[in-house]
Image 1 (cartoon, helix red, strand yellow):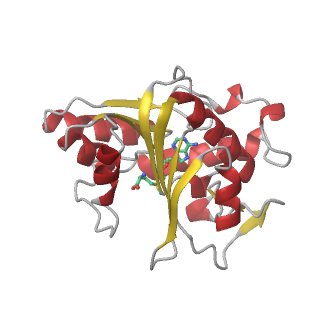
Image 2: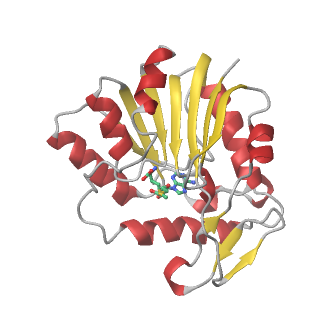
Length: 229
Ligand SMILES: C[S@@+](CC[C@H](N)C(=O)[O-])C[C@H]1O[C@@H](n2cnc3c(N)ncnc32)[C@H](O)[C@@H]1O
């Protein structure tokens, strides 16, 4: 993994998100992925799936960064359609699985283990960023710094697509940070950060961008398309 939790100093983290809490969050993802031995090669049945490449093509996008790519389904889906894709995920095992799947299909995709809250891509590297079901696992502050970084790594006119799930936080064992991020403490999800973003927060997060569309689908997930001005 390229970013170790210990490299994040407390001063870079939002108020109550200590290095220990963040380390546990990263450990959660490693623990979740380590037992998985093959990639989930089924494309998910998402109502907006086909709109992703269609809109990317309409905006003339070729190079795409897939945030929190997991074992790679969205990267593979886009690469099959001819996009140049880079996938990044914090869990090394997810990246290994994604790499093996791409190799099997003879697709050239760059998969990298790394933390999307501290990426080091050069300014203007990508035409587009896709973020499916990943921002729910960041605090509000981390989402803000990540979106600022996305603004930099996109070329002018570059496109962002995100699906922000309304995750059922429900009863469970967790404590809450003041920004309403849940930090889970029960055995199955120990360390995982979970937070729902509402429309006002999404508009605020992307206030320096042109919001092309912001839509709530039946599941309650928000789909956001935005353009770097
Ligand atoms: C809910 S899964 C979604 C995976 C995939 N995008 C999808 O749509 O199926 C969240 C993914 O984000 C990764 N992840 C969580 N926090 C991350 C971070 N800070 N940086 C990079 N990846 C992260 C996890 O390892 C996991 O693979």
